[in-house]
Image (cartoon, one colour):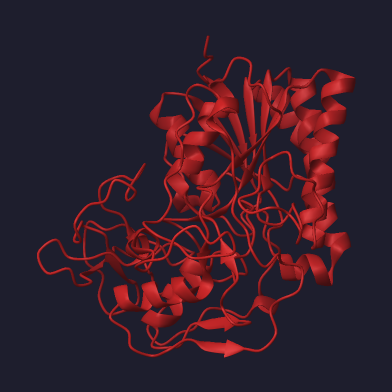
Length: 411
């Protein structure tokens, strides 16, 4: 019998993916404590009904004290360092957040008597270059990056906590997540990055020839998978992929986003692909092993990639999710948001002066497809231009480490 969540802690809960998990929990009436240091997350991502503790997960004593006081039934662990480039340049820093922080969270869950931890891992950076595509959970884990290695280490610690302390840890390995609140100012989130550059009048940058593929999964589907994992009474596996099983090439994605935004400039290319990344990635999970409440993520309408499954039109589900089309004309219909928060985001219900925060809202448009729009609320905004008019996003060197929702880079 399913066990609905009544009290939950969400680490990294003010970040991109985790804030959608928080929304789903709050909508179901759960009491929620968010633990986030706000290095990349934003208070504006959180509903008013949840409690926020601004805290780094590397402080084990503080995390344990918070967990003991709140007494959660379930812990959703999404706090992480997510930048593959940073992990390659400074693996010690990556491990301090991803490994030590996770050990602290697991230990605090044991101390607080939580019945389950839903742990977040990566489906795009953990399997390695020789994995079959689509990749099942049973494939060997041979990560190419320090980020992937830290996530594999955390999974090993999860098994150790289960054997030694009886802690029930269920791990979800995400594909490349996209959707509302995704920040283009980082390494992970190629859809947001492409949209940001196109709407700023710049050309998207593709590393390599653009034939590398990724599995793009909508954030609402990922949030639903987290809640299903928390509620499942006796899942047959300890690790699950969360993805569509369908590849989309980066070149194909860039074309789709540009066409959806009405841009004509071709992407620029850099000769060398980035290190630490598998060339092809798509996550497979058989329905026979999923919890009964698992809602299968739907793929983009078509794809081309290493598995050579299908060829056809551009992946409109991916592009329209960020840029959208007008119901009447099929063209991009820009709308404006209210005043931006500290991350440049805002709401859609009133205009804001000037072009500082402009987005395009998906309102329908092209003829519906049974493989499109699964798990998506009606209408959401994306393709945001961040900051004040004429400003550019800060350089990576000027930003602090990310400790919000993890996920592999897509470019």
